[in-house]
Amino acid sequence: MLLGIMSDSHDDMQMIARAVELFRARGVAHVLHAGDVVSPFTFEVLGALPCPFSGVFGNNDGDRVLLRERSGGNLHVQPHSLELGGKRLVIIHEPAAAEALALSGLYDIVLYGHTHRTEIRQAGGALIINPGKTARLHKGQSTVALLDTVTMQAELVEL
Image (cartoon, rainbow, N blue to C red; front, side, top):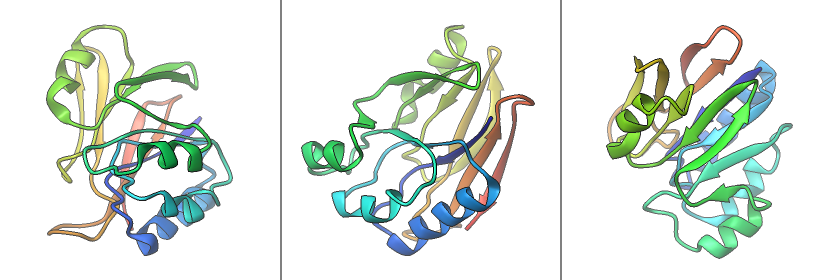
């Protein structure tokens, strides 16, 4: 199963649209968002995803009631656990608990955002991924990640 992973999209509609197109072109089966969608109107673009979407609220997400409604109930308070492609995943926004969650033995994959810096590494048998930031704000590249749950190979992609 191919997963699309994004975070910190911060209302950047152009880059969100690029991510949606990339996920569509690559045949992603499920998109995961590690927080900071920010405004409900972003689901005008995210709603065009040809696959399911799941995510968590970040520290900049405003109207959580409307965000949850527009996401079809698929934005959750962190941590959010789910199983996809036979793998146990947990999504958080802030990185403070990422290492402990990976070392807990409860998860195969730990996803987080917030720092706007990419990271892919192993810890305690779990794969930890921060896809970086989707938005163009601040310095650095706009990126997302792809993860094949069969091979457990992750790839960072610049938008």
